[in-house]
Image (cartoon, rainbow, N blue to C red; front, side, top):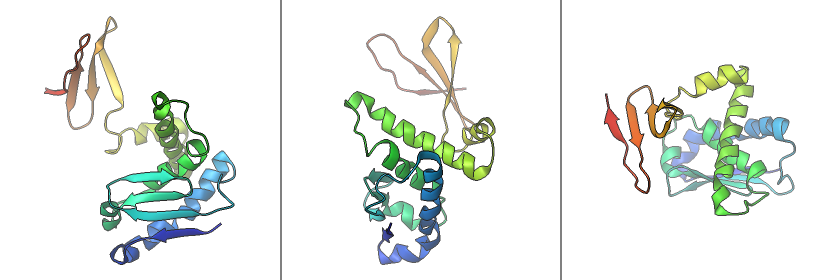
Length: 176
């Protein structure tokens, strides 16, 4: 299966090594999820004019600003978008209410990939993964069991409190 990258010339040299890793990413995903669903076509990576990544069947778009930063590790971005080829692109969700499944499976694919690549068991890996700056707020603590509408969200750098009352939305605010 052909694997190609389409980049602006100014980004090509700085991305050769990290984009050539996509072969290994695909092989790891195949070992976990089965044959690449679009094996009879190709897999491409293309530079885009937005910041972030976006998957399309057989093609991942990556923002030029990310490609311009050759020192940034884009492994999880590539793996996340690639995972969509198994868990989102072959099957469309029934309604937009289920869109979270697409991102949820792709994020879980990141964890499984990195667990396999690191050699840690899932519990050890997740404990490390949850502390990275790319997954900053994954823990919620309820003040009381009776009040699930007030949640304290914690990260290493700050604590945010978010309260909601019936029918209204409040904005997060800093607490000490």
